[in-house]
Image (tube, rainbow, N blue to C red; front, side, top):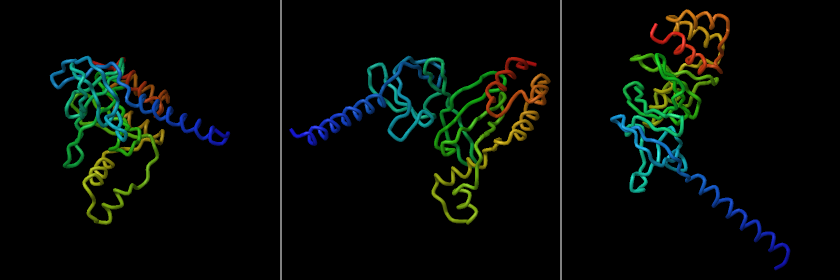
Length: 224
């Protein structure tokens, strides 16, 4: 075999091996727990997402007791766990549309905080939070501009259902990328906790420390 063919053969074999390793790692199952609708915990093997174009916020692939693989969607479960990380199923009311999603639980207690980075908000990092029986609030710290879905709606053109849903989700989303907006939002929201109000006024928190803000509220003010 001449050197040129040998090099081409080497690189072909290497690329095949890399593809096989990548495919194998993408299909790796991890030990975890399903949280069933009745709150029962089922220990099993889980895979984040359920296909090449899905992620952990969309769906989940899990094995049953017999090793059979099954796809679970947010409406099928209360949530699931990988180690100490919990994802919960949330029911979202967007206009007249009801949809479901998996969100990563960041804080629980009097004030609950979740992170969502799935398709409904075009992959943006969106934080969902609420107290007890409140409706969810949706905030994002990325600068946003007029979306295509909003432009379509403004023009009066008929949009496909997925575009209409995204438009409804856009309307729920509050952008707190400005630090002053962030501070004013949570001065109002946590006005029932003097300790947090004082810390906000002293600029203890910025939008990058929202998890710490909720953690401190639950520690200092839960049950007051």
